[in-house]
Image 1 (tube, helix red, strand yellow):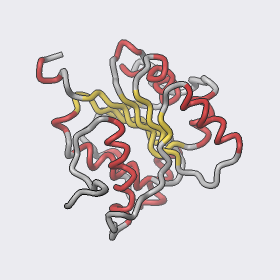
Image 2: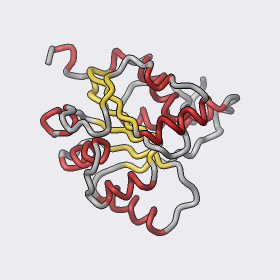
Image 3: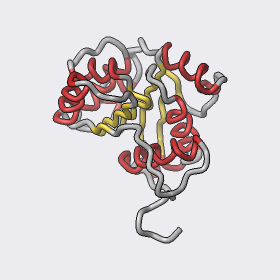
Length: 194
């Protein structure tokens, strides 16, 4: 690790098959524009995530970002071990199935294994859940992940900044995620003049 990379983030972003591909797109767009703040940016997508992206966004641009892509079954990925020193994992959108497997400690693919690693190493796991409404199983799984040190960040947009497009609405959630992950960004702040 070089001296200049010591303060840069090592981040893994995981996309699951929940609706809300726009959140992942906006996050990847913003992270691509903040490359001076990360050392490693890795992406894992499920097959369902690709299908939902195609359905909701009408393209396959998820493969065109300046990141390192990993197959969901590649347990040789550096973030499949704590020694890889990834500080942050963002699951966006996070399906309730993925959340349930994380809560149950079931590491059956790279996403759930990486989440398990992040939690055991006491690093930052951010799960951007999108389903609504929640049933009691969802709520208990969110509680379990929270008690284990994870952060549940529902994909619930805010409207203080008067967003005018779908992507601007999604950015109200994504900017909170980037704040939680410790990135430095210029965004709407309540009570400040823009």
